[in-house]
Image (cartoon, rainbow, N blue to C red; front, side, top):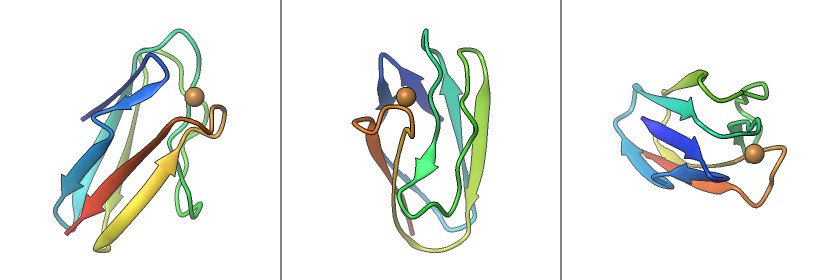
Length: 79
Ligand SMILES: [Cu+2]
């Protein structure tokens, strides 16, 4: 579970096994997205109280950001 709060992804670095699912819980006063840097997946703009999940099926390092606030960056390591 990654919390999206105060214009940040917390924790910013998460490791999951191949096939692992990550859920983001949005808890901020403005909308954010979870968008892979390579655009392999993206949520729509999510308001506080909503969640978004993605299952990672390929090993590797996935960098992602918020498309509304590109300074919000974080990483998922799949192994
Ligand atoms: Cu944002």
